[in-house]
Length: 139
Image (cartoon, rainbow, N blue to C red; front, side, top):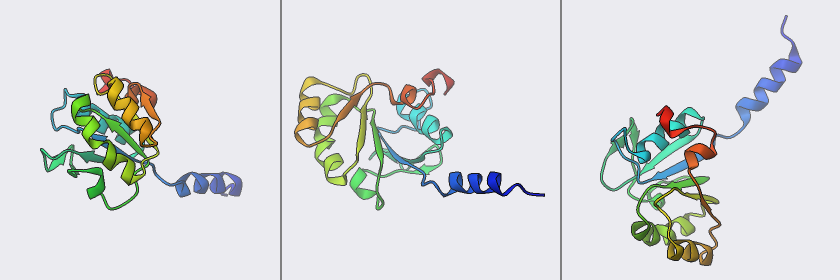
C-alpha cells in the first residue's frame, strides 16, 4: 500500500522549478573551469546554459553567444572570463535580469564590481562550484 504522505512529499519536490544557470565562458575543454562548472551545476540539478561565442556545443549542450540569445529567464550566472571581457558583458547580464551573479576567482576587478553594483547587480565574488557544495577537483 502507498503511504500518501510520502507520495505527496515527493510530488512537491518534483513540482519545484529547476533553476537555470548561465555559465559565461563555458568551454569544451574539460580541464578548464568553464567546463567544470557546466558539469558541476548539471550534477547539482540545474538546467545549464553554456554561454560562449566560440563553440556550438559544450558537454552536449547547445551554446548561446550571449545571455540575451537564450529565450527563457536565467536565475543564476557564473562568470569564467577575464575581468576586461566580463565588464563588457555586464549590461547584457543586467538587461536579462539575472538575479544571482557569481564572479569566480580571476574574473573580477575593482572596476567590474563597481560597474556591476551601478547596474543593480549584487556581485558574489567566490567560486560558484564551491557555492553549490561541489569541488572543482571532482570534475
